[in-house]
Image 1: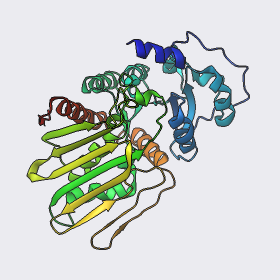
Image 2: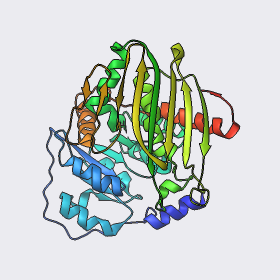
Image 3: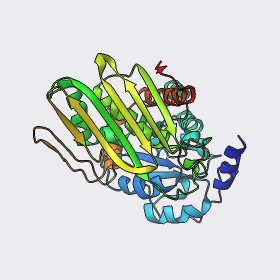
Length: 362
């Protein structure tokens, strides 16, 4: 808990109030055909990916921010036309409940803070989008789901890949099986990181570690590629640089056993550049490589089919899909239940690695 308090203090989350800047001459951009989104946390993902994506969306737009860093506010207001009344800090974000400009609160904080602030967001009565991974534990995931259910708001988890068209084809093939029965699936993600920055991703208490950060891409991919839920997991961690990776693992390897004898493997690592999802079937194969890159996804199949449908921005597609589902009052593509299933598996992977035995997945 001391590390968490230190992080909160350093990041400004414990600020008691926010100095209101001189009123800027921005009119509300409210349009009934678009939902107003408020980003909670203005780190790299918000600044360089979500905010630009929101400039491309058709059904939602950026209207508010929550930050513990007052020095960031002027730039965000100038760049995105955010009025003083739509700027909040972590102690007064409950005020969003009374703000008609904002319809959705998007949690973009370190994983270890997702549960606390997603629950706060739900308590405002606004819909909640939570970046993946959903939370550190299945218990925290369930608490988020319970809060959204209690407040009658919708909850989506930010799995951009399930909105991406080539990935959608893989999901479709899990049902139609054009190459026959699925026999084996492999999902690997990693980068050769020689000098990792000392961010929250290296802090176990704040939800750091590759098995959370990118491991959920592999886990989710194995699940949507097979169209099934795993029965057991066997896993182990490897660390060739213990002086660097002191709290989180450098590499995690795991095998998930699915029904019908389908064998799968996953790997996350900071020691190798890999990014591949490959499916072996009774009558052929197909793969995506890379399968979760920001710059685009592409792949091919054994019959010569190319999986190379291009979209301009994955995050924009994700947010538009989720906004439209809210506006049309239908289920969101990636629910809280879906997000929690991956965290149940993450916990089982860590338990298997710790005990050195196969773990049955609840």
